[in-house]
Length: 369
Ligand code: PMP
Image (cartoon, rainbow, N blue to C red; front, side, top):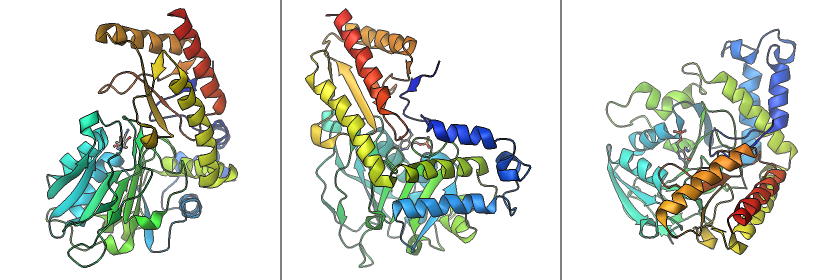
């Protein structure tokens, strides 16, 4: 039985992409080899990585003065690579919008003086703090554009003031769970990173988009070769063996995005899905969304029942998740750190999936009325 998969990542991939990958599995375009078997330095693999990079540059309108890197280690490795490579004066600004930004901040603290300049912890991270401009003697500023666990999303990109060198403070962002879900002005950022296992590819490749002037010769002392951006920019992501299969899969996903209207097409598709679901939650007297309306994510939608008794609520959540699974709606449990339920509606999720989810939710609520 085909299920609707609401996982926060690894997550649903377009059916068409999986079919293409299956058809090409044993013999990529008459090469007589599977992409999994190719030498990363071969003439056969070269057009595959090139195609992925070209598509990404086209779809995200990445300016010429940015490098695109296909790395490993997940977004979590970027939590360390960013401070190790961008440290100059020794201070960085972090906005704390939940679990992932907290982790990024904690990691940065190992290498420099990372300051939490704003936080939404006072309301359990259910909103994005009003940070319009970041100023101070910072080497860079960091935000998590979409908060996968809390279900919040920045609707504006903060400006940055001048840093110690008289230039704008570089803005760094984790875009793991919203990359290509809608158009994004890359030029507003100095560095973007994303684990690809949500909107782009299977788990195993991490994308970094870095403005060339940030690739320095002098990361902090002791930075391993593999954790220096320079190593990867100088070798076009081929210093060592890159995750070839994932880069190929990303190319197929990007082709699907392009065929479906690019970033703008994804936005339209995602807004339709998310609006349908939020409207349902907002009208429901059984469920609700804990997230403030102007901070809501299009990609990850946590929701709770209105049951006030904590024990009863936990039991209800458990029943919900298990009955949903039986109905072919899988991975709806909230993150283990926050509980409740969460539906992730990444690009590849079809609107039929939301209709099926709402139908199920309606039946579950009625049975308990
Ligand atoms: N940042 C965000 C916003 C995430 O959602 C995740 C994973 N869910 C991570 C970082 C960690 O990514 P990875 O597992 O690729 O290290």
